[in-house]
Length: 275
Image 1 (tube, one colour):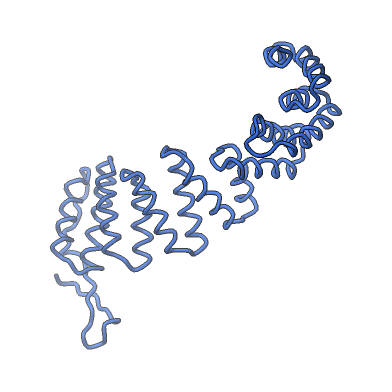
Image 2 (cartoon, rainbow, N blue to C red; image 1 turned 90 degrees about the horizontal axis):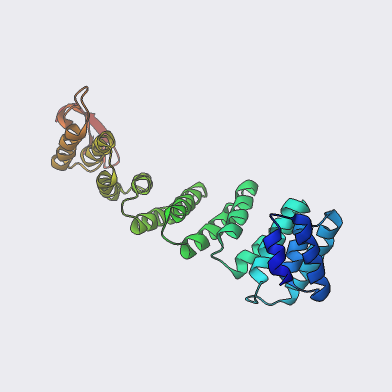
């Protein structure tokens, strides 16, 4: 009853709520919610003493015990906001995340620290855990993108391609992921797979100008990189069809083509101005 009244009063009468938390602790010294409340509302000394006692009480409660997760969360906030001990708060957030891998708040704190310190390996591990636990929503979509970009920064290009592919599997309409996947595949020397990813990006795009630009890029891949003039012209025509009014997009026969020189070996190429 005291705790219920204290929680009711805390936004209306902080002093009254504080007194109720004090009485509750005299009755039940190890009550997690009472210790949290007093640490949050008490003066600096009460906050410090209550936080220290709360930490001891939480250590005595095994993972999964009632109130432990909420206690760890509120202890971390107290250590950060009231005690100004970010190193202690980090330990509490990490413990909460370890026991509850799907906890978004704990993940956000851990990922933020990894970004600030530049610990990309830790950030990748955190993001992988988050995307495996999180629902398929916009927030998880952003985490999938960050995971792929971080792997790219680490020069783990094959893993980055897999991460972008995973993002497109979870959301086939994710235009940004499809274009990033195409970029990664092209850089990895897979122009055909890059073109196919861009074809999906055309479908996922809503803006006609964007569709035109992507079709133009696909046309270039087929003609210049793959030597498929027919399919290249097909996408050049689509680019012209999608393009808003303005300067006409040239046909592919007006664009120089890169050809292999048979006399100089497969690695040598020449630019031919004729179709």
